[in-house]
Amino acid sequence: MANSKYEYVRAFERDEVLLPNTWIVVRIDGRGFHKLSTHYHFTKPNDVRALNLMNLAASHVVASIPDITIAYGVSDEYSFVFHKTTNLFERRCAKLVTTVVSTFTAAYVALWPSTFEASGGGVGDGDGGGGGDALSLTMLPTFDGRAVCYPSWGNLRDYLSWRQVDCHINNLYNTTFWALVQQGGMSPTAAEEHLKGSVSSDKNEILWSKFGINYNDEPDMFRKGSVIFREYALEPSTGPKQEVGIEGADDEVGIEGADDESRGLQSPVTKTQAEKMKKIRRKAKVVTSHVDIIRDEFWLHRPWIRSGKP
Ligand code: DGT
Ligand code: MG
Ligand code: MG
Ligand code: MG
Ligand code: MG
Image (cartoon, rainbow, N blue to C red):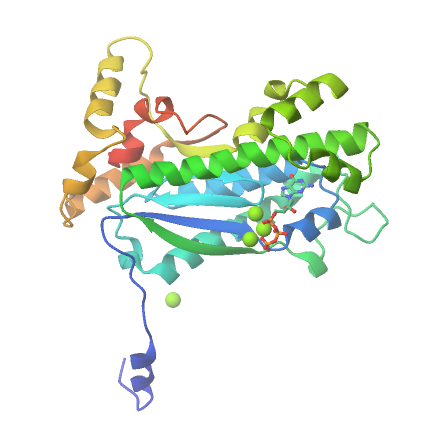
């Protein structure tokens, strides 16, 4: 393309390039979902359809971006982790964040009808009629996004643990709060007052003694959130493949991760290798599960999440 006299304006563009050799987390969060969940009559405190829709949209993001190694979601947020060796969009922050946010939002909106209408309705369009299941143009779901770089595997594990602990604390509170309101007939203000200063064991006790609810029997998706990753045919619990899993774990998954820090800035992966791995990742099964990611077990059985291989 020929240069025009206007071409110089390009010089005003600035790219923020994220630090090399760091784990990039792009976290998206629903904008004004307090209002949106009321508008569409989401079930309180957890709407299974809304959570499933978040998971479907996130799964689509993970499947379409092979550089994402794991994702974790709770409520109206999702964190997508790019492997530290990624060179997607030359690690330009704006490109990474906007691509994740728009891919997620497009999927969320596209999958809305099947997710909500398959359940037999119940989602109103906010007009008070209760009949419409369609997304209304007055209240379209939108998401914001940000990127944060974590320099070590330990920092990344702590980030993910932080989100999962948050999920647990909020869900225990919300479950108790809404039990007091919905089943206990308390006003929201009275329930809030009742729970002021309470610790976890107090809430567990309220749930059990007043409502016969054993918090541990609540669905895993509510208590632990959702984890999305690629699952390969490793069988870490029995047979000869166990060796592979554990060996890999020893090499790659220790929390201290000395190799993490000692690895140079140069990506150890050649371009051909990277292409090959991308292909394998594209073919891999993307799974969603609701498991503990704070303890080591999850990571020990899935060394590829950390190693990026394949
Ligand atoms: P923001 O993120 O600053 O734009 O504002 P919000 O309103 O999205 O606030 P946020 O993200 O801190 O909290 C998430 C809201 O979404 C919270 O008010 C509860 C609501 N929400 C998320 N999942 C569910 C659900 O499954 N059921 C119901 N009823 N509400 C939900
Ligand atoms: Mg927010
Ligand atoms: Mg939000
Ligand atoms: Mg949120
Ligand atoms: Mg273009």
